[in-house]
Amino acid sequence: MRYAYAPRALCSNAAVSGNHMAIKATVFKANLQIADMERHYYQDHTLTLAQHPSETEERLMVRLLAFALHAHEYLEFGQGMTDEDAADLWQKDLTGAIELWIDVGIPDEKLIRKACGRARQVLVYSYGGRVADMWFAQNRAQFERQKNLTIINLPPESTRDLPKLVQRTMNLQCTIQDGQVWLSDGEHSLEVERIKLR
Image 1 (cartoon, rainbow, N blue to C red):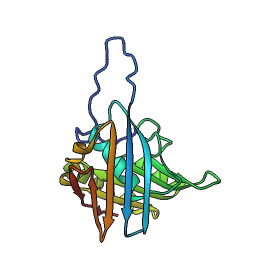
Image 2 (image 1 turned 90 degrees about the vertical axis):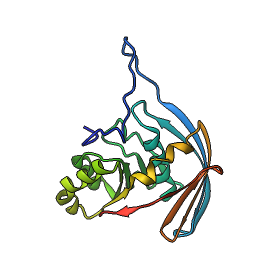
Image 3 (image 1 turned 60 degrees about the vertical axis):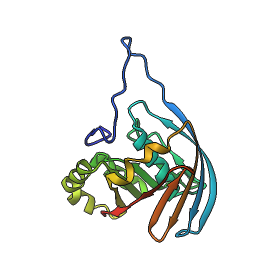
Image 4 (image 1 turned 180 degrees about the vertical axis):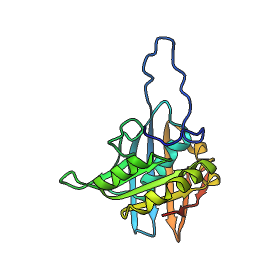
């Protein structure tokens, strides 16, 4: 099982037609300008994101935010939503070794442990308020054993407005400075707080 829980904050119920045909992913394009004063990283990225039918717009935007926070020429989106052997985002070196594994939401603890055995560094961006807090509390002892694991929580007030930025083609700016993260589309400007849990 990919996720320990499936709260409304993380998943939506996709309607399935009577003949059970597979529902296709929705494709989004994002032109993302990143100004990261903390890493001295200033680049524009043209991204394609596939939204799984059971994925909310909030989760889609958390994935995009995670890309902005760790942008690198080798960082790419994975099939983490549907494949237990893939991350939501990952960065591999030229030999194919996984340098960075990123999941968003509240993945199953066993899958996090497996990722920690495969990647040099594993990062989880949890969100969802009380459900995410329960998930962390219940798995804290197991998480403490993973030396290459970092868990960052995004409070509900930081993620609930992210869907306002969603369009099929998005033009976004992400500014990272002095611990603060701002995501803007020119009309809306949202601050995202990060709380490091581990």
